[in-house]
Length: 336
Image (cartoon, rainbow, N blue to C red; front, side, top):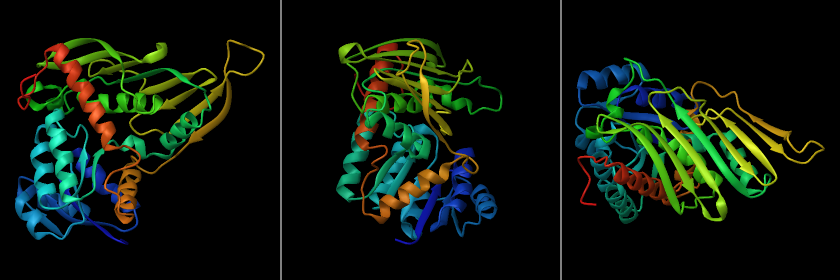
């Protein structure tokens, strides 16, 4: 497939950034866009040079010739939009968090398998060259056995911020919006292993977590410490500590720098820097995710090897678990 025809669903800030960076990906065709308002769809299409524009999602799926649909609508709409695209036999890339809860995610994955189409949660941080290098260092045993992972992602929400992300009625919360990045780093550090126990604390606002801290416990005394916050500026850094060294990864949502340290040397208190991964990518870096998805489609893959559906399931299961402990419920939740 030399050219991939994309349908863009959602004309907010993320949809705009994603669409703009298709310019860096050979063969990426901006085929159609859909918004609830035809005026908004027209303005978006004019800005990003998109031919077909719709205010009816069903009609876009039926009429537009698309290879894949990118879904960038608010969280609580993901299930409806994903299922319609899958029912139409379309490949789907959906923004994270992909589902409100595990029942929604299971139905999405079952539908994608039934329709034999590609399906991926858009954890774009996994697609960056720096993140690929970090995983190569870890999987290659460069720091020995990973003993501890510490990840912080915090921002100070202001008036211009997308406040709906903090409300339970919109399937929001810090762990839902920022957690995919922090948990994604932990899963990379522990090779997709699920923790044996979880301890946590929460500051609740709007029915959801506005600030949360997690301690994930793994076998053999291994641990992960996570901060997700809408009320505190944190360093957006992941640190992986191993028996033989450590790794620092900067800007965990779009990594541009990582450094590998080993413990070999005369000073037992100091690590020695042995390798650096750096990437001065253009704009935001969404083009890495777009290129990865196009490569998957070209090779006939039905899921990503950089962020698998098994990891999506594990992440959703973990977030459901802590939400239950916190008493945080979404309108789409079923029973326990």
